[in-house]
Length: 453
Ligand SMILES: *Cc1c(COP(=O)(O)O)cnc(C)c1O
Image (cartoon, rainbow, N blue to C red; front, side, top):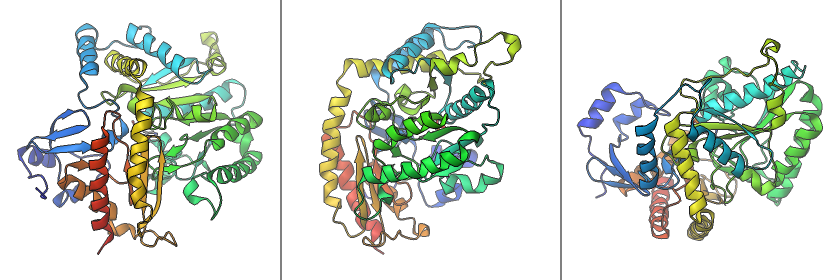
């Protein structure tokens, strides 16, 4: 029972030919490669029959369960009808209907939809569109972006440029644009006794100072609303988003909301921006957009932005960014079905109950001598492991304590994939309270093992 999956033929073939993302392949001399045959609800089922509870929604993509029958049926139907068509000069029902639905469900004022095929590509689109908007307005001097410390917006060169997670960025820094970094409103970094709201307001003051110095050369401020996910599930107060909206207006810079991870109900509302009652100039969506079925992303923007590009061909103002699979009908149809589930089922209400259960179960860790913080925003919860609780001293990164929790999870049939020493829970919305109990029990055992020795 407490052993790791046996290397089977599939794993041997994989390791002799493939190169996996976010992986030092050498690790697989000791870390098992897990061969998966199929999925069902919140579970992944291995080729050897072992079952893994997917505590992280397979990299934050899955919402309504693996191989969800309703989404699978829509996909099969679309595959028999129209699999793909060039999206320049041609259009199709799934792309149009999805754009209409996205405009309907996102904050008021976002009225144009541009498709791409993954999260990083959506960020590239938003950065280029913001720059190009200002250029078309006669402000070609605006060429820079403001990003938050600890932010993550993807790993293509533009998206990585506005990211601040050293693990991904450091090596490639010589290739990147240099953003202006504003201090994150991260509540974990608040001063002793300072509330999350007070920390947000203090950070807004610092951002105002940066804008006073740099607004003339800045296209946009880009943020992950409410939760900086890849940066360690760091969370902040919605007041920061409201303050950012008015600063962007005051200083004539765009507000890019990267809701790629937090969109589609993760934070308790359909979109995180709703909690600050604001509309950004650009909203980037991906991951949950297709319920975890297919790669697709969308950038929503305002009529004002759209109109700055709309001119006679000879004016040379058109937005140029194209991917072969832009607006793929299969992906659009699957996204429409995902949004239909939100319409037909009380998803957000159910999530509130699941989130409350998760919070209740994680309370047990608050007094743990190696837990500095237990934080949660809706269906994202995180536990920060440290060497010393009072000084919040991290374990040496080389200890790889989080990896021990991951390995323990695998032996117990749970997929928990910590970010460094941050153990987090971001399950599919179809998880049950009983399954949450299982996940949390496994995490607690894993933490006990990881912090000793
Ligand atoms: C995952 C992620 C991205 C990048 O999306 P990919 O599809 O992995 O390229 C961008 N921003 C945020 C906030 C993300 O979590």
